[in-house]
Image (cartoon, rainbow, N blue to C red; front, side):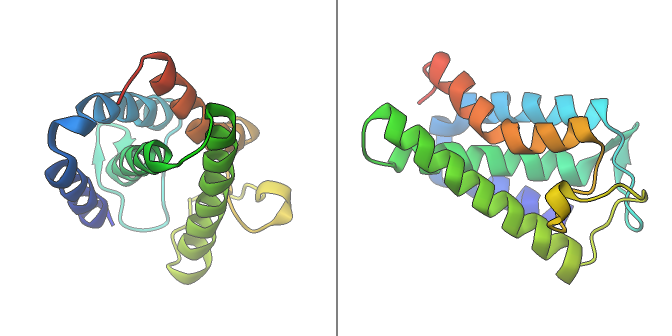
Length: 148
């Protein structure tokens, strides 16, 4: 999975070149924040640098860049675009979490309950909050910094 998401990041960079440079840095900082704060320990295949698990680091970075690219291509006024990208982010977040947990067997080595009993985001409350807010906050931050 690390290789797949790394390839995805490379593909994004190859397609958009310098257009995603700032997005990449900010997305990486978001991902680094969450992966250095919370120790991800999966039931199998943990590739780490120190205590930072590379899978969520690369996956968060790639996902945030992708959501920003989709946001930039969304038409409408800024409030409509923001609402639309939040809904899109949550749909894909829950879909990917569901597929990863139930179909691919990607599971944390813990016994946390899922978010709202939906079978997704098995983590402590603070992490659940981060997962739900990371995309919208990333969009707000990159808008504030005028990242294009």
